[in-house]
Length: 515
Image 1 (cartoon, helix red, strand yellow):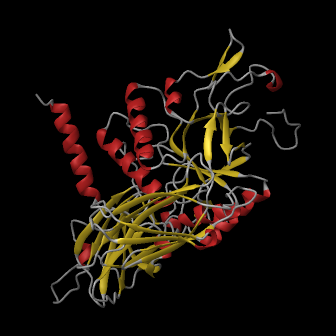
Image 2 (cartoon, one colour):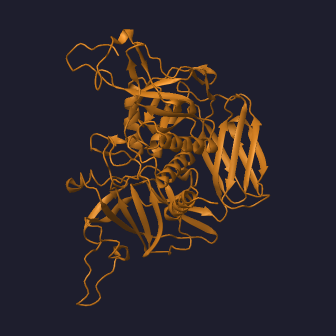
Image 3 (cartoon, one colour):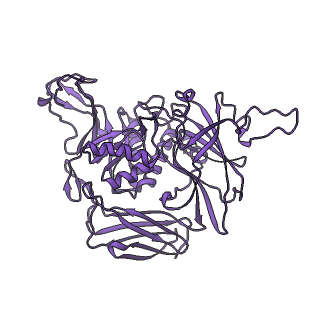
């Protein structure tokens, strides 16, 4: 007999999937035929959430003297896209609620061409309307999504509306409380993407986790088309693989390479990779490296590596707003380079693609995580589905970036059966898509055991992880129980351990105690 709880779980998952209008993300949007929809968008601040009720996405105009419409996009507020709304208008600095965005665009479409609206991110949840019809929804403020509009666009005068809402809720991620600014708006690039009818939808090209001369590759067409020709070229390595898709429109292959120069922070070598089908071609730069754990060490290219890392939020201090451009990425990453870092933890959410790609070129290893931060409702099945969607969107977008070394599944969560099941689901989701990275999470559970005179951590879940990380603000939130030079850290024995956050005890102008 099927239990009621099982039925409810299935219903919740089906509802979440139907609401999200989830579509398989197109790999490497920045290497495609795109039309930018960035720029000034008309905007309406909807303080009382009346816009949907009044159907302002229709943008109706009075036709008679007795017609009255309370909202209009024209001749009012205009906001930059991409950008958060908080930094653009003083009245919106602390705003939590709904803002409607609108713009018009033309879309010249050739026969046999498909069109997709692609959003790098909208914070936090949104609905998309095109020419008066709702065409998609998405939840999650830090990952991309797309909606096919091939049959919905006109050649000229398309009216695109985005209903964006950044209100915090218990079932969201992050939830009601978090330690960064609650930015709202269309915070990343918006594109109209043009593809052939059957196109190269996804691919994953990587060096084998342990073998220095074997590349593993997978290519997926947009349709389940069998016996289609695929060609994979890496010109600098004299690689030319001629392949044929299976009944699912997919092909997988492993092949040997000679004289491969592996990517590392000291030598961030990237190769041009060209993937061609009978109707499509995609090109981008990809690096190759080996990454694995041996005992308590992390090995990069068969050598243990000492990580010198910093962490930053996706924020530009000069304008007190979200970072979103290549220039913003260059500023933040240059500061990390000046510190002598070889790794960056992108806290506490997937950051924009400009940052990821430039970091790889500059030689940074990266830790990328989804915003499972402290007070998550781990008993809520719908929340679990949202987290799974977020981690899938993160991995799909960035899996070809060899700089990505760590997928992070959580930060500062408390042990419980529901927490353990929730995080295990995220680990399994990650590993089902990518086994070439290391799975990690950050914990704030280290305590000082007076009897043993040691720092210890009691959380059996760490055995599910490749690398354990701890946040401990000694001298900030906690006094040192012993002098730092006598502190013994008996934490995560047998596994690599990263100190992912720590506090500064000294005050300016006073002598610092070593940490």
